[in-house]
Image (cartoon, rainbow over all chains, first blue to last red; front, side, top):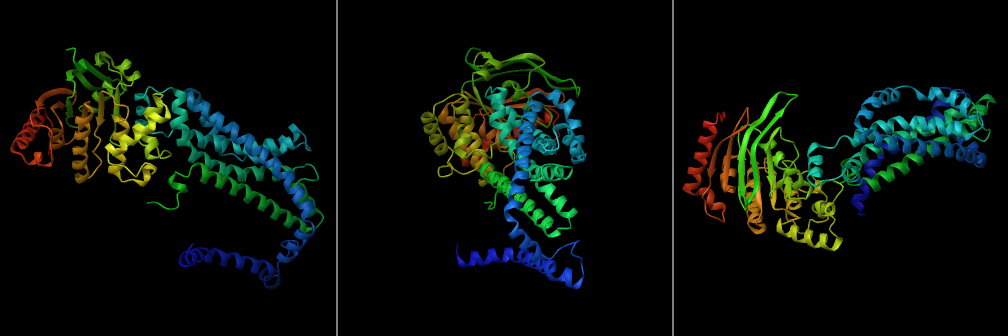
Length: 264
Length: 258
């Protein structure tokens, strides 16, 4: 990279870096010293960081426990949704019968079911969190994938018909590739939802090693620094998952306009 | 006629839902190595006629034979290539892979596919762009890829639905010449739908003039311009006479050409 490209890059990032720095300054000094925000509302940044460092091993153990629940729900929910969308796209009358409910389900706060899945699968079982995360992921992926699979232009299908293509060939060569940008848009939404599902699922009860349980009990014991440090861990893991999905998107649908950096 | 590539008799097509008679009792014979243009006002059913030949729409009455077989059999045998107004390329495939698509569908092995794609890329003047994706090409280049794809498996018949309709005049005239060269070299038969009278006259051996609602053949104008045609052909007196003849046939058929 040349020096000018580097400096242009720096200029692109400068505003965001300034906002970040201002946020830290506000958190560390402005809010506690100038606005007099109490410790139980928001502990100082330095206090959260030192707690984070001291308790890092137990925090990351809890984080990993909950992350596995989220990841399990993400994989389970997204894969069943993808297969479901294939079935609904293949048998259109079935799709027409089911789609309105899928769209409606997409609009309801599914997280409200978290206490119910806890009751169904057991408070301490990771499955209660995996299932709520999976259900959260399921509907956006189903609806978006189905939209992608059916947004093929008519000439594209006429072309395949001219080649005497079978339904399976049309899916493999046209419908599925066409749907992939839609699928990744949904996966990026779903990976965020899966973390929310797992952490909030923990709030309604779960193993003491779970991140959500630790956040809740820390607050109950007035250990606010620990609670904030745990939230930081949840954020790091959430961003890491999102980043992985975004990276996969670049690798898989690099040909698509939305992932292209340089248009010729 | 046994030497017909396409034989259409008594073809009608009604779209029941919209209560539209798109085609009414069309009969047409198209012989080997002919270049036939279908021209007519919007709604005359020229695209529907093309799709009936390709067994993409099913006729309400009448029959279509391609290479002496029912249209359906011909489609299943891969007897024709098709080009649309939009290039209909797959963004996730490179130029080379887009051209190879029908070859993959026909089960050609890799070596044969690679050799043919190389040939086609040179034929449509896209050498050096094999590994580009469609979105990296201009509209004219994209349509050349689409034409290369249609010709790639050497079908006896090419169906073209306004392939140059979305291109600028300059690109269009250049691609007209390229298409004629391809047609002469590959010894194929072409059915070509267009809105442009001069394009129809320049390209064709026969122009089929259609009228609308219901879609009927109102005139057939044989084009006796010598082959091979060149850019200068468009300036010949005979060219203008034929353009006038087709235009008058369109007017006689009730087309409202403003």
